[in-house]
Amino acid sequence: MNKHWVNQAIAKIDADFQRSADTHLIKLELPMLAGIDIYLKDESTHPTGSLKHRLARSLFLYALCNGWINEGTPIIESSSGSTAVSEAYFARLLGLPFIAVVPRSTAKRKVEQIGFYGGQCHFVDKTSEIYAESERLARELKGHYMDQFTFAERATDWRGNNNIANSIFSQMALEPHPVPRWIVMSPGTGGTSATIGRYIRYQQLATRLCVVDPEISVFYDYFHSRDAGLCLSQGSRIEGIGRPRVEPSFIPGVVDEMLKVSDANSIATMLWLERLIGRKTGPSTGTNLYGALRLASRMKQTGETGSIVTLICDPGERYLDTYYHPDWVAEQIGDISGAQVALEEFNRSGLLA
Image 1 (cartoon, rainbow, N blue to C red):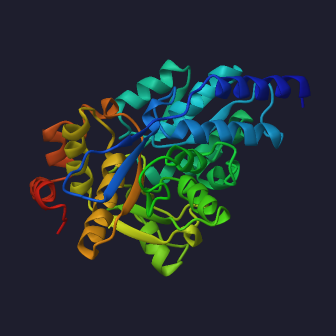
Image 2: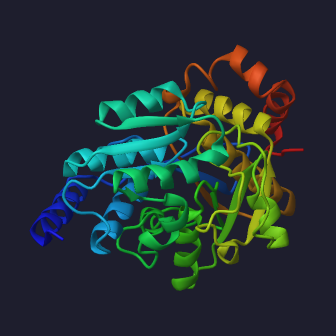
């Protein structure tokens, strides 16, 4: 182990963090929800354009401090794209080779960004194949398999240290309802929901955590059954979230409630948000926001007031040829017109059927 190199590597990552500003908290203007405020933590403004920038930084520091990465160590990761983009950034920062094992269906823009940061993509046909193939490559190349799906929940300091939960509550301090009634998060690895849920409990806050799962994913069923052997034959159609197997980093005990969100509702809400804020976001943001709107509708029906916080996970420009292309949506997702009509009714009444 070249301790001098490791020390320099950690110092480079810390310096990069010091140069980075916090991400914005955006308050949505929703007059139909009197007394209920919805906020979006905009994680798309990280240097690599997504929430996964935080995770990649933590995973590299965790691996360096555990002695798993040394000078010249090839880094291999299984990913649907965004984590790989961020890890390619940090691998380049440290001068390490990087290979992302990704499904062939990964958005073209993500593949291009991995290459921009000097990484390579190794494609597999099915999402379920990324794990074994990453392990095989790491063995053959004598590299380190980062394995975000196992280590996401333990690589981040959930007690504070400017993690995403700490940032949310700090930014909410001067708002009308500073302690959110709900924080809403969708699971990819499950690491972010674990961080937020643990932080809420550690700080003894009244906030509840709602995790929203896309249509083709096992997390919702696992939350209710605790059957860790659940498995699906295909991956989620909402890129970046939902998994065909129960991931080690998903911790159901920190979650207060889960909602299942149809893919049509995810895409319709993503498009609805663009009209509201004048910016494109990714499909997982649509999943998050739909969950927040469902909770807000419930609060309105019961006469509750308060705040709800959720996340913008990444920018929509990565998905111009997929989720923002009507023909692709019609072919891959189906008819979303019913979901769009429901959102128009929400604009009028503040209620979702």
